[in-house]
Amino acid sequence: MQTTNHNKYPFFDLLEVVAEPDLNFRKIKSLHPVKAGNFVPEFKLSNDYSRWQQFYNGAETHGAISQRNLLSKPLVISFFSRHWGQQGLAQLKQLNALQHEVKASGGNLLIITDGQAEELEKWAWEQSLTLNFYHDANNEIAKQFRVYSDDYPVWDRFSGIDENAPLLATYIIEPSKQVIYSHIDWDFLGTFSAEDIISAVYESALISNSRRSA
Image (cartoon, rainbow, N blue to C red; front, top):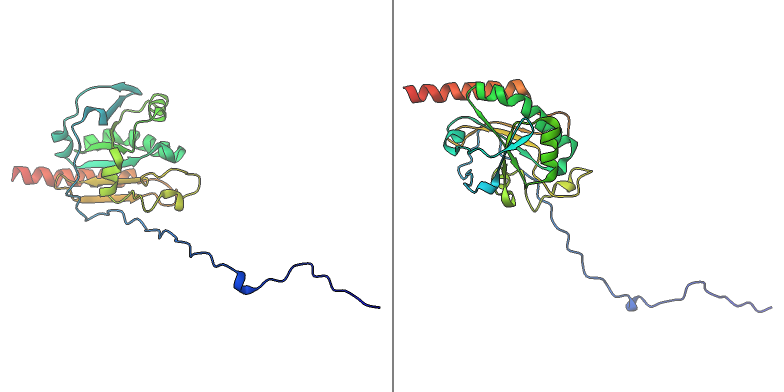
């Protein structure tokens, strides 16, 4: 009895295989945020009125902000983006509760955000926020503090966020542009220590005032 072998898969010559070109993978660069002890000499704020937004007890106001006064004292800077959702809102609420103590200790507080958004106005009203915001066009300031990079989008590290945004970071800088406090919320384990913020602002203001009076 003659049998016939039928191959399920056809034979092919290895010479017929065409190698695909190597894929070019984008090399991810890690962020290395500014930390305490560093200087941020290029830190500047624009006089463009459209970049500033103020809220008082949830209502938007339009009073003038004196940059000279803002930058002549220890300045608490916190980076915010609506893309962080509830984590970002939690940070705003803590800053809102802290701002009066910051001013009483001789400092100022400013929120740097990556753009105007309806969510911000909604949250400000619902939470009765009294805060000053500066809209950082093209994330210029965030790049100076190295908390934002086009080469290191935050969605590569954090789940649940699908847009690139500055890290949830809080700093205190002196009028000399030296950073005296830094906090990055890498793991959502909690935001900054209010006690540490107030202590750093008070000590910096005390030293600055003593230098002026010397």
